[in-house]
Length: 177
Image (cartoon, rainbow, N blue to C red; front, side, top):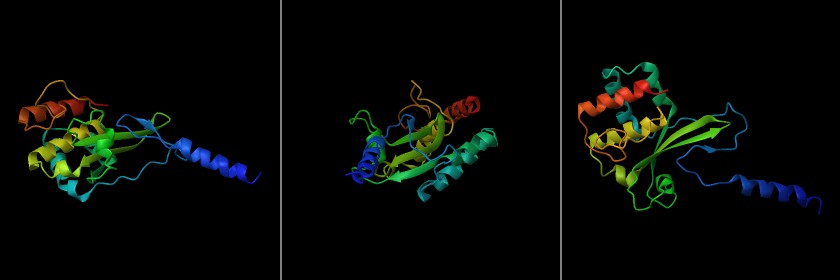
């Protein structure tokens, strides 16, 4: 019986430590504060990151702000029931294309991940893909919030944008912490 107690405690801890993820900051059990998740970017997104970095440089965004992109993983999600994008949707009727998820430990961000729904990504044209990546990086890299207006990069819906909207996005990045 005494030999079963450690097994029972271990099993109980495993079940208590598991929880559902959300697009809000969530705590994760980590061994130490300086353990951070590795950064991974799906190869599908590399050209968009390159183009976005070039665009931001032309908009006079500092290199230190642009380099924050390098701290974010971007993952193309499969079309199955384990889809991270769908698991974050608070309203299943909304068409969620992507989501930024930040994990924290002791109020320190341990990972920043963008999940993009593959089936929806494949339906977007090149411009909307770039806008979506910029939008999600706005959340994950620069901590920007959604805007209440339409036709802006940080609006909740992907749209075609003019250079004026990119100028406004650049201003938001410059003012971010």
